[in-house]
Length: 249
Image (cartoon, rainbow, N blue to C red; front, side):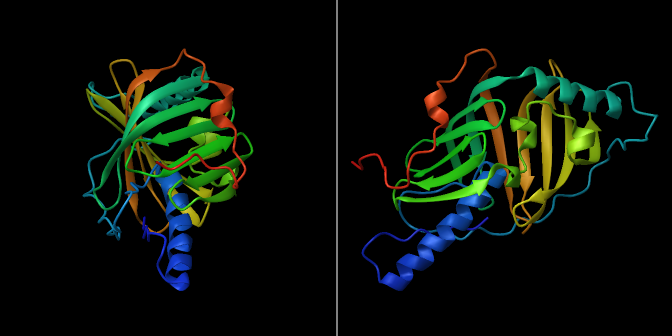
């Protein structure tokens, strides 16, 4: 994931370049949920080397250790978790491909509606209204719209999810503490994305996910204080006109 953010007042050409790269970063941000955006300065994300391979439980492996979940059972439990979770509010911590850390609030209301609110100094917000996804930068006052089907985060947005049907399952890794399901989605913006979804085995609740975008850049998102009961205000999921911006203090 790459983002270069230039302040206003630079030459016109530099500003256009910054805006273009900003929108690319916004889409990458949505891929991984999300790229850290600073309010000042610029950064160039470094490509993350793939992690070392770990021993895993293949889908056809019938000799799982007693401490692990059977892969087929884990997949079904993941489907059950996501399909039961109609709404969600959570705090998130994100680590981008360049190692930068950001925080914010996540709101979800199925089907297809979500909002990521980043705490300052980040200036991005991501809003999905069920049909479209808007990547908005409050500092540059730019907005770009994408089709909701271009996101790899189907596990958060679909009304009824079947991992076996909706994505390609690559691997299932389980131990006494957690289970990680690795998915591949070829329908995302820019090519194929890889998604690792991690669950806490105590109650099989969602802990975090990691998205590797088609260029190989990784973003890790960890959730805290998950609330699956409170219904978010519907106004959170309205995409405003690109001419409407909050006042900048």
